[in-house]
Image (cartoon, rainbow, N blue to C red; front, side):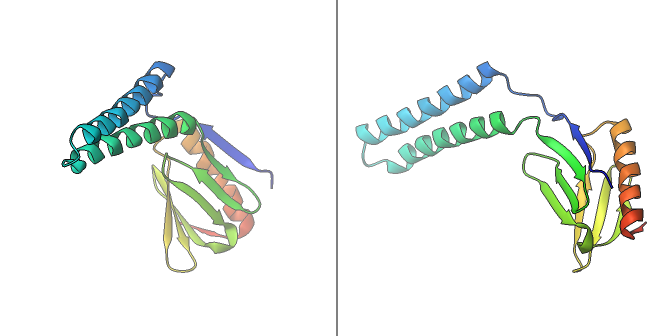
Length: 149
């Protein structure tokens, strides 16, 4: 069967270039402030460490959000299901691992053969996309002989 891929935009607002620069600047400011606090008063290492760590976190999160935007998709192919549905959640399931599929209004629950389940949330896509995804999944499941609930 032909590969089906549905991409969708991030439901959270995108960060623009000026916000990225502001967050990087804040991170550098926090790091510099941590270094200054450490050099001024060597007794208070905890406060300097908190400033420094805060700056590192600002820089990491700004970079992560910039390069992770708009890369959300759901794909059904001959091997299985691949999905990147949020910033921190990816799914990669082989068809042979699926025992049954339960379709709910805004998510799909895959019951796996080793008594675990994987949930594919469709809340970030439009209603028309949800209908298309469910229809294609039904076709693939029928072809692969997987029980649908």
